[in-house]
Image (tube, rainbow, N blue to C red; front, side, top):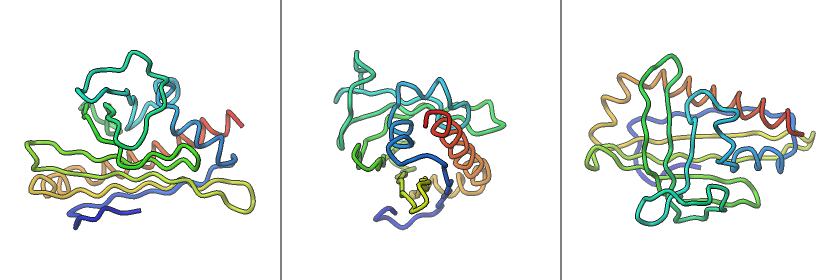
Length: 167
């Protein structure tokens, strides 16, 4: 669960969720429902076609190689970022989700990995990790590492609340 590139900044978080993996998977991969339950960090994910236009059916099932538009806001921030990202791993069976981002004319690149592991006690461990590299990753590290960590932690807590409410 890491990028093949050397990261300037890595942010990771883990949350234990008292719900079976299929329930957590459905919440994590149910992009259309994100506005209903996530208010921090990744607040919206929209499905795009190859030309980066919104798909008319936002409940369509994406696949590896699909494009998504991710809306993210760091906790305690008024700054919202909207980025088009490429799904580099999408496995609906196990709930694996990873996307690749390139911005600022290729000066900032990142890959985010999200996985679900079912424990013997029936809980699910949600793990997420994002690696950032490129020249613009240095200022990001100096200015936003704490906010990114808070965002990852907040998203895990919200995913936990959503999945536990659905089980």
